[in-house]
Length: 284
Ligand code: PAF
Image: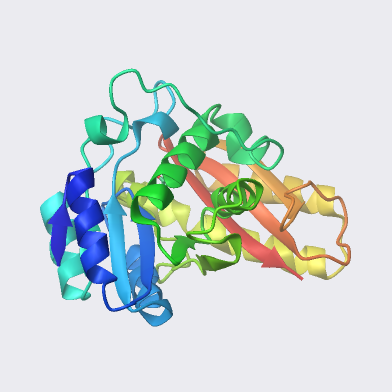
């Protein structure tokens, strides 16, 4: 695996990987890799001849008072994991390479960015869309893979790729990979490591309570009352705040009061011990 930190070296490395006409997959990450990321890498290897992973803790997607400084950085350990997975290229730019002096451009994806995490974290999805667009232009992959755990992020990136007519990757080659979960169902996240043992145990209530709520909604019970009961259960289990717990159209993320003909998703963000956990699951 080649690790590159400069854009000119990245271009040469990508050209070398593609010289026999090979296809290239990109897995964008912020590092602190766990099994969820490695699942993306393995899927990437099934979808393309070569695999590139980026590790960049993107400052523009963190708001004031968020965990940018505390966000775990462990490039050597991450590189060893990627090497063991047979990754071809690690792109790990410094902040100055991504945001040169005077950087003044930002991408806003209206609509799909607005609610849920977009409402709780103003500017977050502008930062995500901008950095992902840059990564796409830098690496020019045939396919890019993202975890479904960040469902809204995936919707924002797909909308951006469609609206900006991106060709590498084309919107149809932006692949969502199902969430990887711990034994108790908690979605894997780099932020789970912030939890104390007690908070970690209580956090297991989140996927359990979501599954119960989905069973009730699919059974025809009232959506509003079911979501209120879900919030109560999380607060009773030790979460100090529920930012949102909503049923939404899976593609547009428009909130729903009843199940309709199009695929729906239950989306939740809740805080425990100051750590914000998000999850989402399909509702059929
Ligand atoms: O999901 C993430 O890790 C980040 O939001 C991403 C897509 C790498 C952009 O910084």
